[in-house]
Length: 164
Image 1 (cartoon, rainbow, N blue to C red):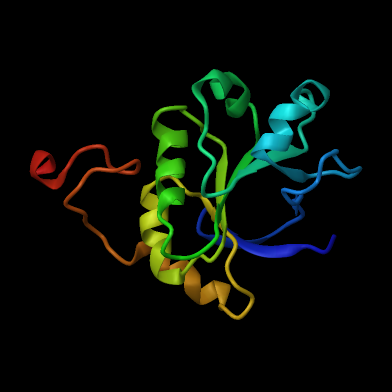
Image 2 (image 1 turned 45 degrees about the horizontal axis):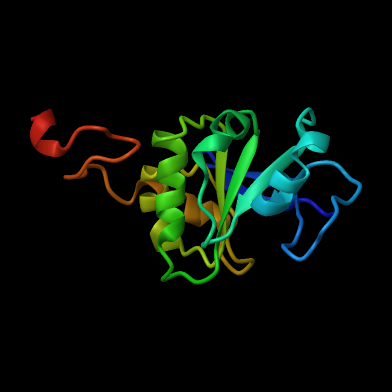
């Protein structure tokens, strides 16, 4: 699979993670595979020691607490946005950071708009796959659209009135 240009931790980098589609029933051969959440759970025993396996959540998937320990060992968890108006991915990212204490890379892909990047970063997202027509070097600037926020979030646990 060819390298893909993404934004990770505020920098444009290349990534070799290959996304496996939801209709696949067996894990294909290869390295750096992003498996659908359901497929990963089904085949967990056979992939649990691999460092080149990641997972992705679709908008209707939510992390389950009985998988907390296993999720924390993954190098990457991706979240799919099927349409830009579907905000469930924001909730999933925030749950992974706050409830599951996930410290690895959280990536978003699909219909992700440049205008959403700053807010996604506040929810704990660390890497972004954007549409091919978007200039990634310019999009990096969107991560810092605002310098101050009223409400708390993953990146700032106290609201503004508590910080004054």
